[in-house]
Image (cartoon, rainbow, N blue to C red; front, side):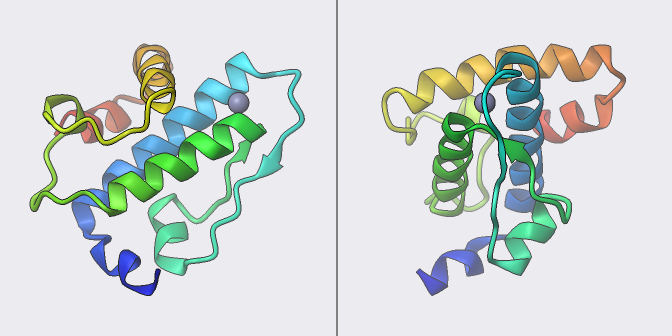
Length: 124
Ligand SMILES: [Zn+2]
């Protein structure tokens, strides 16, 4: 497990931030009633990539973020392509549909709320 964080380069750190922010927005807007807990990140580099905070997520969204983080760190491509342009479907079934749903919602949401900086990160 120790080597996995060595793969966290700048591009991946950026993507991770977007992933975390997108899931956090989605969870906040869709799972208002669900009990939430801070997403605990033990690795400092990873925490830094997520903007030095632990997003409050429901249990399902925590799992999704965990899955996404692992997949991102394990991405075999160097440099990592934009996920939506990638031909490898690395997300497990179930997670794949959920992350698509999150992206579909949170992308336009961020634009509407003036978070264009995040979208640009994502599209790069
Ligand atoms: Zn949620």
